[in-house]
Image (tube, rainbow, N blue to C red):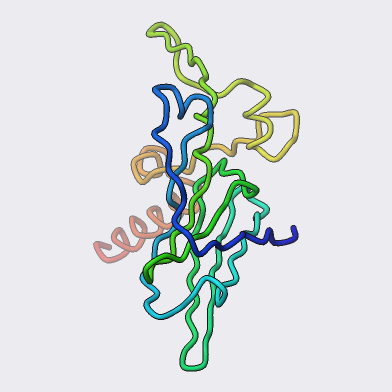
Length: 170
């Protein structure tokens, strides 16, 4: 995905008092980055945001003047609208804001005491590798199982020990 250029302003943002339901309407703003940058001006900054393949986004801010160069990076909260990002450099402080993300979608989960917790059959198939069958391997044998049911090889070696013990007595 192409990076989104974030506008950088030299004036402080006008912050109206949010209404009682501003967060629910998506009209509230959050601060996603704040860094001290004494001596640098808004014109020195390039700020951009890039969405990644996993649904998140990364914010980068860089500036340089005749004497120094600075760069900052931050991971943005999920569900942030990259088009709502704004940057301000006022009194030696870089502040990047965004519209508050909408609340996560609510899901109802049914929990019952009479049924064991399990994924639905379609989800089990996805996790097992996509085959229609249950792809679980049999559980490995434990030391207790091995002692209870000796294999033919173990039986043979124990018979050899008994025979050798009998030969010593003879």
